[in-house]
Length: 469
Ligand code: BG6
Image (cartoon, rainbow, N blue to C red; front, side):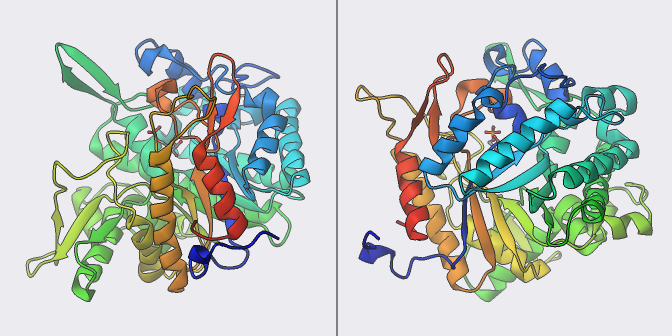
């Protein structure tokens, strides 16, 4: 065994920590109409002129559907011990419900077998936004409770089919993103008479009160899916969600500030995380919702808060800095300075400390006993250099800083069991099309050639040493 560098001693993660990478179906698979797959709302949205930068779409994407063997081998070569992928619901149920499509299921069985053969633990996400188009047409998507119910049927079916191979499931990825972006699309004026559309599939704009009902149906879908997975999978199967937590960072690391940050985090995640973990909407959330909305029953709240085996949080950036206040509600949110540093994406405010506070808040506020960082990473302006390599030094800096903060959390006893870097490879970045690169592996979208970046080298060593390197 190679010697450990002295620097990594004391910067190690707990034994058995999962070093993982993540992707999602629509962003990498391609094969959008192959082997009986039905249309998803993202197929429809991306085909709509002007919705995606350069009118890109995911029809071919990384062609992972046909190149999964090469991709699994690459993941193994860069030190991934776990892989978080998502299942395209319309590949399994082309109409959302009814008759399953064996060929679609076979793809995921082949993929999982390839992963297990490579010693990579599969973590399956059941919904990463590619809703069957039929459910959008028939029920209005997540505007209807019916979608939550059929999502659970599909989740139970997958757990039964993959139960002998897949031991970890995430129900839904980023409730906040697909609800807020998909149901409140906005056109932003970028000057010179040009407008840019911000949002995603299904590309609707509904009222605030209806939006709250959509949120409710999404968390209800999660709760029903947890129950369905438990009912159809072997003992020992684990289930949780993967939510992009809105994180408040205390301006000063002192008790009153930390308390204020915890209060803000609990309140600002009220529509998703808080109700899933507490089984109730906060008073402030209901008051803001105008009393009557969202419509829910006590029974539904119990379902939404079905016990979980772990929580998954996607952590990219701080949402607020906070300080305590003598005025109600007891805290004050501090605006971020215009000169606050950012990574490449305009939304990506930089503060690696968020990787310490996010899991610590999960433990302190909700008593979480098993936490996964289900996404963390950054976009960068990656290019292939003359020598054929990709020198993403900013990503290496970002990862080392974030993982350093995560190690600080685990060393203080915050129960983080694994980390999934977003993303295994460059892919279709939603409305940015192929214009944003988040991968450890560079993809040439003309030839589909894959090139591991400098950051992949870094990741491999961190995984090998189980430490910040
Ligand atoms: C997360 C998503 O929001 O962030 C991923 O779960 C996405 O699917 C990633 O690719 C990067 O976000 P964006 O908006 O820059 O593509």
